[in-house]
Length: 172
Image 1 (tube, rainbow, N blue to C red):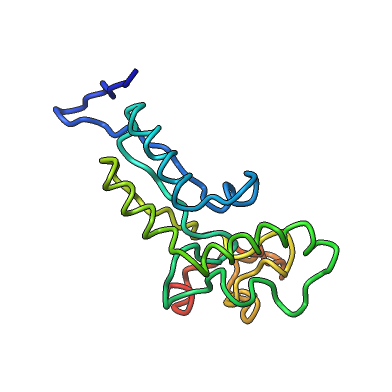
Image 2: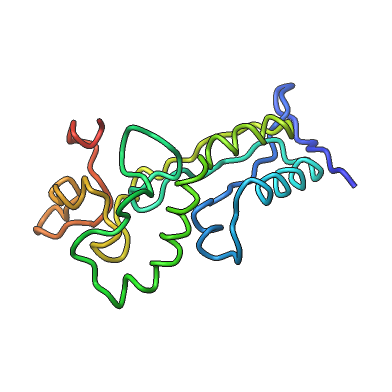
């Protein structure tokens, strides 16, 4: 049964939108979330009346699409200073993301399949997410320049991963 979005505002239809956190799908679902499962998911969304998708393209400062800018899940998603015990907890999901990035561009696949299913696609870039729980998940920018993170106004305590856009280097 197909559901039609019925909300109207000023004569314009409001999109019924779903957010897809692609990295979390890779990390927490069994198997490989490549083109066929993406196609099935978007087909189900279209049947249910979903008209737009927000597709997360970044996590911990790493990009989940092919780009000449920024850090991608490619050769070395972990830094040289990894904590072995902690790295083991995330290693599988990072390795899964890297393997997929080596053989496909998830954003290109999402774009092509959204068009096929008549769904609008909005890339979702997590701008305040350049670091995770430990230094191993920090982006190269934050590893090289931790001072680019926000800092408590009365102390020298930095908020890891929450970059300050007051720095031109962060904006670039």
